[in-house]
Amino acid sequence: MDPDGARSLLVSCRLLPVIVLNDADTAGWLGSTLVDNGLPIAEVTLRTPAALQAIERLAEVPGLLLAAGTVVSVEQVDQAAQAGASVIVSPGFDAEVVQRSLERGLLPIPGVATATEVQAALRAGVQLLKFFPAGSLGGPRTLQALAAPFPQVRFVPTGGIGADDLVAYLRLSCVTAVGGSFMVPSALLRAGDRQAIGERIRAAVAAASATAAEPS
Image (cartoon, rainbow, N blue to C red):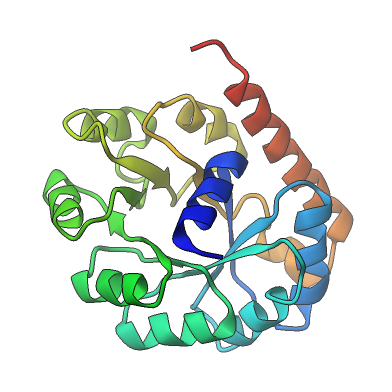
């Protein structure tokens, strides 16, 4: 999927489940569980040896947009692209990672925590940014203040966000989508509990839909 298509789907979903996979065999049923419950998008973090293979498996699921998370090097950008990712998510801002993502036709979402980093991202031509770690940095109130001088920038807050925080972030006009592991917790993945994961996904999708329908 090209960057415009990836961005459009992210805007539509308003959610980005952050997933840590230790076993690539889990990817098959997880991908179908996401799609079947109304959330055709997933960020697989490159924190485990199984991550790239898991992205390859997930890429076989029709209609599923894949992001590679925790990407911190140009080499990882290339590996993620080859595995089937369309989006590159980083914990911080790295101009080389952003540039390589753009060269590969991928959507980069670099992480920022300060106005200085936002300005660096804008100079690199990026206006969709990850606010990380959102919970530790002060949550929705801090994000709203950070976004104020940059009306052209949209954010994907991630880090320390739970189901109870979701609506507060989604109500911010500067937020495109909210990322978090609360939708697909590692404990439920290890247990293979598809039903519980499906319930969490449906609850998040319902909350996002309800927030989108609120009067502005």
